[in-house]
Length: 401
View (tube, rainbow, N blue to C red):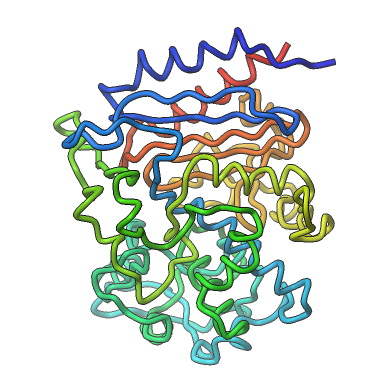
């Protein structure tokens, strides 16, 4: 029977401290659960360099795209209530999008478009195969997003969901729905759809259905003044200078303000323990000790690979998602899924469900080995993020004996 060596796992903390903190990261923390019990927690470094605040167990972080699995679960809960179908056309809920076009060629000033080969469906949004994009991707359409202020997560334009939807209706899709995988604002759109169906804000809906039942008391879309002393500053890595600089101050932060649009794709703040509660929900088939949150079959479908015909992200991903590191990795309805560890050249388990955030946060849930891991830090544009996440897995799994 496999056991977890508490002696061997200490290599993980040594590695983080010796190789990353403080030279590459101001600070970080990692939490590991094995067989539903905490087996390791480690913290090192600072959450705020200016004020010399240490990373603590209750430090609050911007989790960015680790918001996505919660929003996807929100959609699956609507599915269980019979209020939405995965195969529904998106225009059923966003009629403003009934006449979307697809980019064919030309410059931003002279776009040549064509009709999509088929309608966009909810499944396309859940799997990032919608044809939508992000403003930071490299394409003519991404540049249009940037020019028109379609950034959503903490957008300085402070547009409403309806205003975003209207702007996007006039921007062509990058490709016909279903053709490729392209990381995008798709999950933000799902958040807007949740609001239209439920009649609640996304903040209210996720709080009622997931966050409050799980006791995720520090998981919110904005920071309360009473918790500022626990809020981490966010930094951005300057590759030219090979150093990091302040991006968002922990006290003078935009997160004090309640956003006009709640970003289902990247808007939440959370702590390492709060997010582990969400991981535990998935690890335990949708139930807590007190209640069932989501049906086990619904959850199993949500975290299963959704790519067709044995495809992986390397084959159908646009941009960085088509790189070698995504061989053997598929995509579910809210995160990555390992479909072939050998092809991926890693010691990850088949079926591992995982994702990360823009500030280099990460989590993975390995139901085969009953391991859940949450990693927290606050570093945007971190060039070592992918290698760090791979090293984390190696150091966690070497402790299995």
